[in-house]
Image 1 (tube, rainbow, N blue to C red):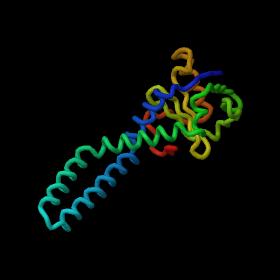
Image 2 (cartoon, one colour):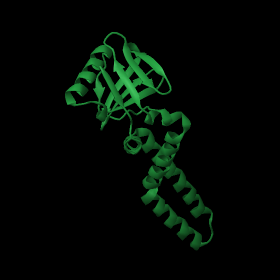
Image 3 (cartoon, rainbow, N blue to C red):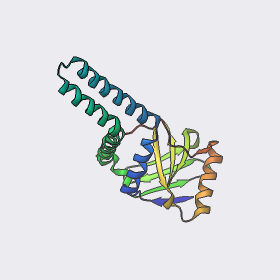
Length: 181
């Protein structure tokens, strides 16, 4: 079974950022950042002798409490954009071909490489929104958009054959452990 596709940058960016925002890691970072900033503000309130500084610090604390998640989302989105715009990530948005061999594994071909990924190396399968994520090796992964398949039966055949050969189930929850490069 052979599929050819090209990942759309904007669609992938929206998918990736929305998935990142759902992870425990992101939520912990938001909480710890919020706590750290509030501790600094509390310190300023305790140290300052003038009520004017205390009032300003209190207003800053309220604004931070309200907008921290928004600021962190903007910060993370900019980090993700920087990562996707790096030279090493450019291959993701070029033409790619994936061939599923019933005997050997996945043949992945793009302008950078040709490689065979054996079934026993595949660690996890995820189907989230419009992407099939195949995780293998040491945190390497392939994103296959649903648009790569001609129709729904072809998509189901591909996924079912992959499930059968890898003995893995397909999760619909965003992976918590992906490295955000």
